[in-house]
Image (cartoon, rainbow, N blue to C red; front, side):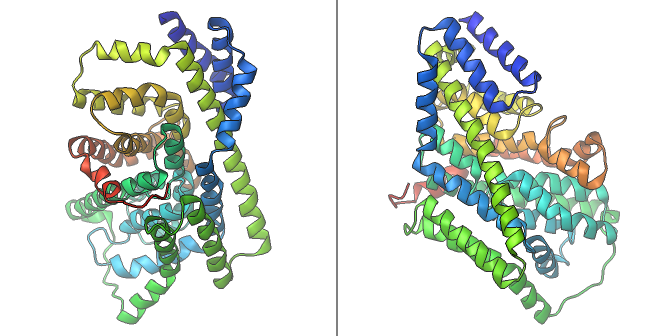
Length: 434
């Protein structure tokens, strides 16, 4: 069995190193292993897994949520968020640096993608903060950290994928991400406030004050998007809609907002559809490859072998969690979030369940660890996005994001110590909507 494990690692690195797409790398590795070590009809197994993936009802929500985010991405959402939020938080310690965190939190609830959240919010906030004299390191670091919330704040694309693979309720996973997401956003804001108090030069001196009328105008600017979020999530948690139906309502609401704001043109709508198609195709290809890879490993008995080896180490539940944090942080240096999740879930999920944690908690935990990987060099996606936007080096951006990486580590430990942070809201959901 050790030979199988070694061959698996070698084949994965070889195919990925050759530049093969991740989904195809997983299929290739699984197929070669099955042909060499098992006499099972690989082509039939692959076609069966492809059918199972594309016919899963829960996955219909995936392209719809992607389309909703893309439609709002091509409108004035980021501009309205910045101008609407700044009038309310200008007097807080840290001032407009909090806009990065709050805008990312709001956009995460309509995007579901970390990369899209970082890029959309960063296009507006970084230039504005730079013009007003804010410390560039804190501006870039806070955006890198807060952009990762796109994975955790519902509706999250990666949560849908996890729910399908782990056979867990997507609705309950969405609920599980709310409190941890708000907790992490709050920790980010506390850090920003603390830094600005210790180092006043981080923020410029400002005596700018806003009237009640200006604040009410600010509400009108970010109110439509907030209302869309409440409507979509409320329809699901209230038992009136499934996640798929909620996603469809979200697309309709995004179109209405774009039309009412006169920012959604036929050209922009076409670009949104094309971009959503590309993203959905990429995700489904990775998903098909990962499912086939997982099934192949199951036939080979590799997950059970690794589980036995780790069990022999006699790690406590907390030691296992710390080991997983380090493992996923390392894995994130060369793989994207969805790939990391799908490649390792067949091995790590049984270990965590055996340690006494449940699927919903682990879904939130693993997503937070994947968020850490988004700002881990050399291949953290958020780092590359900010590199193009700021012309800084990957190393400089990673150092700016380091405090927020450590905050995400703290969030993982808090989730391990207090699992109810993730499990409380799902436990009170009584609806049968899946």
